[in-house]
Image (cartoon, rainbow, N blue to C red; front, side):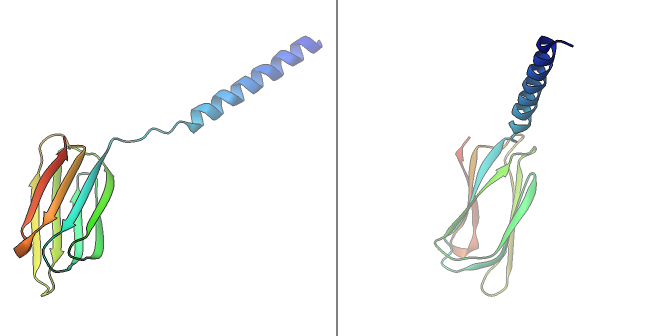
Length: 123
């Protein structure tokens, strides 16, 4: 084997290794959406859960005047459910159907009287 053939094999091996590293470094990311949960009820809410098309997240408490924002994977159909307890341990829940496809950003607001509303911020 001559030096030229050996050099070509090394060059081919190095090029293959670089290509594999480049491919391994490319991550496919799922389409995501932003979900904001606001508490403007005047009281803290507890045992808060928000179900979204591809999962669920929760928190022990969300005080009045605060917002919890998350970035979550999109899913179809675009349905949500908000659950929580008020300071008197009364359970509140509401379902939201936003259609076949999820928007880029949605906001759920717990207002006075623990009324939950939904608003699409970015379609």
